[in-house]
Amino acid sequence: MRVTIIASGKLKPTATLNALIADYLKPLKWKLEIKEIDVKSHEKNYEKYFLEALPKTATLIALDEHGKSLSSPDFAHLIEQETLSGINHFCFMIGGADGLPEFVKKQSHHMISFGKNTWPHMMVRLMLVEQLYRAQQILSGHPYHRE
Image 1 (cartoon, rainbow, N blue to C red):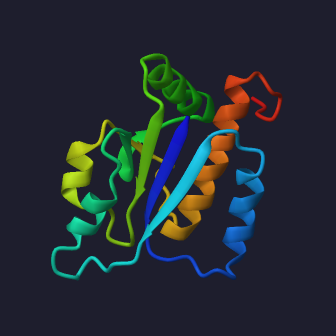
Image 2: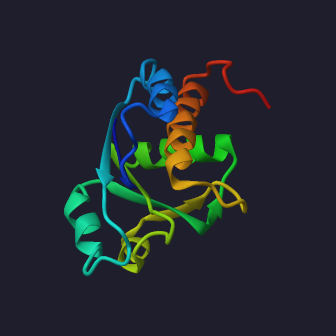
Image 3: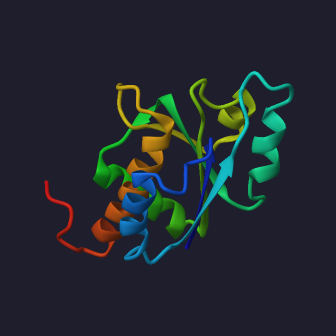
């Protein structure tokens, strides 16, 4: 399975978040790529950067504050159901401070939220990668996730 994360902003190479993300990427069996879009929402036609970054054949999942809040097992179940229906490439979109462009929300197959709290978009990358690792462990029956 392939996973692409398209995220607003550039994470500094020395950022502690990079090391934390790498800790989850090492044991992740799914091929994961993070594409960064370094553009400001006030820039004219900033939506085109998102459009250009979208993989053509992936199932698009937008992370948005108005999306559906899923438990970790529900998130894993979503991945499993899509995979069983033949999907092998997921693309997660993370907007910047102003969120995602409307066309991304409209094109997405699913919109999910990491709860009602507002999270810094750079931290959401780490949270998403951890949830992907957790989903992998749940689906394989590994005891990493505890209820």
